[in-house]
Image (cartoon, rainbow, N blue to C red; front, side, top):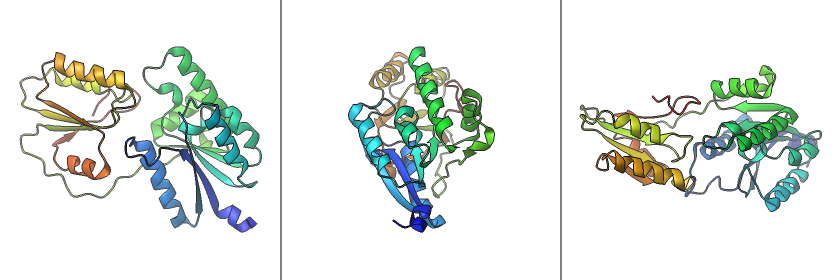
Amino acid sequence: MTASVIARTVYVVVPGDIDDPARPSGGNAYDRRVCRALPAEGRIVCEIAVNGEWPEPGGQARAELSRRLASVPDGADVLLDGLVACGVPDVLAPHARRLRLVVLVHLPLGDEVGLPPVVAADRTARERMTLHAADAVVATSRWAARRLVAVHGLPADRVHVVPPGVEPAPLADAEEAGTRLLCVGSITPTKGQDILVDALSRIPDRDWGCLLVGPVGRAPAHVAFVRDLVQRHGMATAWRSPGRSPARRSTRCTRRPTCWCCRRGPSRTAWS
């Protein structure tokens, strides 16, 4: 590979399930769009998908990541998804001096809701080592950038904000009554659908309905808790949770609701 090709090539390290229709996520969609957009900027994309239970991979996944990084030529740019990179600073360290590492952080590892304090602290410590070894950090929101600077003591000028965009779509055909609600996202403690259920249970006099769309396999215990909460509040007829939704089905869902419910910032209790 010539020096000019190396200079124009970006090696993008992503989770092995990036295109798995059974595990859709905003992070995977963001990574895929980045891979598609870079060629328009004159860059050559070489995708490195590594299977593993990130951010807590087994020995085989760690060895595979190390092997794939070792195959990247000296001086190359490597963009790593934080879910893969942030938990394994010891795997990245041998490559940090010869490669230009850029880590993309969707959510700080220690901020995942429901983690035992010891686990959260350990993940935060490993993430700190990874980010300090990187040449640059990309955050997907201003809040995430501020959080990374505050938690890890990173220089603010090394953390760059690249917020996600949206797909163009026609205006929703909303009903006048304003009672159709939609919440899209993995059914997990971090997304906080249980908080939404509790909040809506306090307005039983409204004839509303809410559709939860998202993968149900990442936190089965939380999925069961949310379903039980719906039953406990006697709102089974008001709630629907069809589980994961492929892109086309998600698009159809977004054309019908009056209101899209989403969590704001790091707090599970802040909803819009």
